[in-house]
Amino acid sequence: MSAAEGGLAFPIDPPRDCPRCPRLRSFILEQRTVHSDWFNAPVPTFYPPEGPSAVELLIVGLAPGLRGANRTGRPFTGDYAGDLLYATLNEFGFSTGEFQARPDDGLTLVRTAITNSVRCVPPENKPVGAEIATCRPFLAASLADMPALRVIVTLGKIAHDSTVRTLGARVADHPFGHGACSQIGQVDLLASYHCSRYNTNTGRLTEAMFKDVFRSAHDRLR
Image (cartoon, rainbow, N blue to C red; front, side):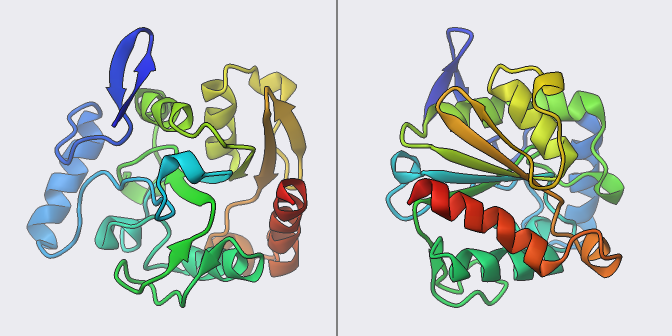
């Protein structure tokens, strides 16, 4: 599948051996040597069974975790962030099935898709600005393929700012802040702190705070 970007066809997901970010490419090749049984490639967007056309809620994270999505090949699968995210999605009816932190656990998304602003795992979980910008056309192509999209939840400032820019808006007009809500075109944008273990362990993000964001998404879609 592809979408138009500047009049040219652009793929929704990067190819397995995407060369666009040399530092990230080099890091993935290192991981393939060390962990040959891991996914170790750009992690594709996780869609509901009906595909992109059914998506009303999109969740945008930062990037695959080294031992999470980079290992398993599914966004937010294999680390603590996924435990909190998928439990919350299930509570509000955005998923069905039991999350067991592996891509074959049978969990199904409902009208929901999950992706990352940077599709390849970055060293120390820190992509640089050029990598974020280089990967943005993939997010743009994904958004263009979701005609029913109504709500986007961004997890963390990097994901939020990249999404705002992808939607053609100014970051200054839609600043990041946990619980912040804004509208860009026909899409409601809801911001949350990232559901990382660091944020929850330090109290920066509580389960109640995280659930409030998805309760708002649920109410808007209802």
